[in-house]
Length: 214
Image 1 (cartoon, rainbow, N blue to C red):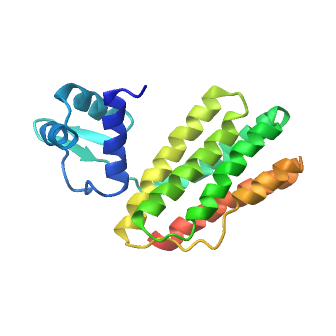
Image 2 (image 1 turned 90 degrees about the vertical axis):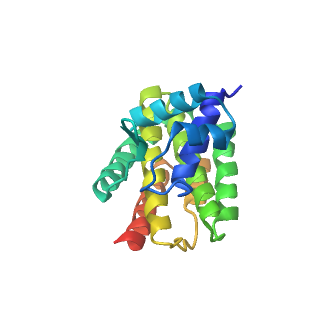
């Protein structure tokens, strides 16, 4: 069961990503307690966790400031993704089975469904589905540390992409998803092809974000 603290954490994080909380606005414990209808303790715990993750910065006697994701951090994160995911796929290869591939195929199908919806909410959904697909594939490696690092990297990109795209008031018009091609290569048990499409998918998202903010 999800704890109250975890629910508050997720609500605050989604508010940051969706720009419900503007970058120049300080988050205050009292106001968040009133907004979510909870006591101060879970709000304080959630804010503390977000601060430790570098998402917020504590401003003594003032509140919590949202930390802006720089272009440099995002470029570094895309490079890290490529390293982690290619290694993850190699380690996962012998562990892949029809059930695991079917799980990835379900996410790919949902990604395709929301692909052409142009709204801030659909952007959030697309980014979450993208995170789920790649983190799940990496998790099949059985290397928990590898999966953890990728999840952290994806969370940073998730926030940074949403932040920059929403600030520019532009939702990228992606023509297609590459997730299906990755899945098809896995079904064919073609490792080289799967690696190629995985790399293409990472680069296509990187190209998408720079077309918006550069």
